[in-house]
Amino acid sequence: MTGEDAAGRGVERPAASDLVLARIVREESARVVAALTASTRNLDVAEEATADAVEEALREWRRRGVPPRPGGWLMQAARHNALDRLRRDKVYRGKLALLPEAVPAGEAEPDERLPLLFGCCHPALAPEAQLALTLRAVLGVTAAQIARATLEPEATVRQRLSRAKRKMAAAGIPLRIPEPSQRVDRLDIVLTIVSVMYDAAHLAAGADASADRDLADDALWLSGVIADALPGEAEAAGLHALLLLHRAREPARAVDGALVLLADQDRSRWDAGLLARGRVELDRAAALRAPGRWQLQAAIAACHCDAVRIEDTDWRQMLVLYDMLLGYDRSPIVRLNRAVVLAEVAGPAPALAEVDALGARLEQHHLWHAVRARMLRDLGRVDDALAADLRALELTANEAERRLLAARLTR
Image (cartoon, rainbow, N blue to C red; front, side, top):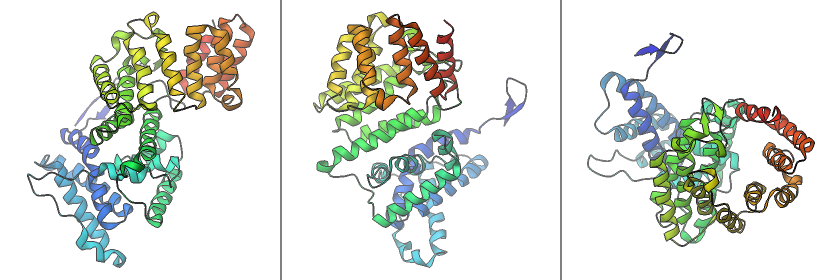
């Protein structure tokens, strides 16, 4: 099916079955990969068999329509693909009998997404490998798509995935949810990777301010999967609340590809439904009485969302929340964000002192210079502010941020 774009050129429109398949891949592919990996002890076989099944579905569903149980169809097709691969390799023939049969109609599919996610985010793997594996195995993102999201060559991503999967096999990394006594640190790694995934959808080098909606929505969806699967984990609910609140502000944050600062955003464009869901999720986390960094970040975001105008923002409450957050996370970016709030409460002079104290760790980060420039300007140090803005511009790769900084320089 074709249509026309704004320039009158023919463009391909997705078939209705393609839209269903996109949803099924998000919801079911991780279950399929996890089930096949648990049986074959080979993530490569499971992942490739599932990817082939998705390609088959793309062709078959266009021709014959979406089957009654699309998730079961995908599992059965992937199982057949895995069988074919294993039959061709005598090393794995002994595992053929272990492959799961398709779940009979009416029975629930076991949810193996969380064990797979914890396996991909095992601490034995480097953070960049954890992110790539999560995107590939849990969300079905291709190596080319990962490369675009992480701004790396596709060959680098493929090598990273191969090394990570070999390490998983050699180290015998299990696909299972850790016991409660070991879960806190492991869960924080998982939540961090999902947060990094969400951040990677925004402000890519060379791009404008528009987010990669698919990647951002995948991260938001995955945070919801974790929160629902682990209802007793307050931090899981905290991250889900945080991403809901961030996503709610997205329509006002980027307008026609231009970045709009919080103070200048049209708050009527914020998504009221997502804001309400974020507040409910934050309340659910608070009721568990197990505070942590993700809940505190969500509470800070809620302070912004609760203000009808920027002038109504409860900066003192936000500063209290940041002081609490420092008990869980003393990273320089958290401290830089706290300094911005401190400037609203106590003025630019003490805030600038806090910012300058972070110079050794953030001197190569454009945001440090941009924040510092704003405080210098508020103190009347115009020349120093200009120099800081120029340095921020030099360090910024995103086109929307570059335009914003360049506009500041012309004032």
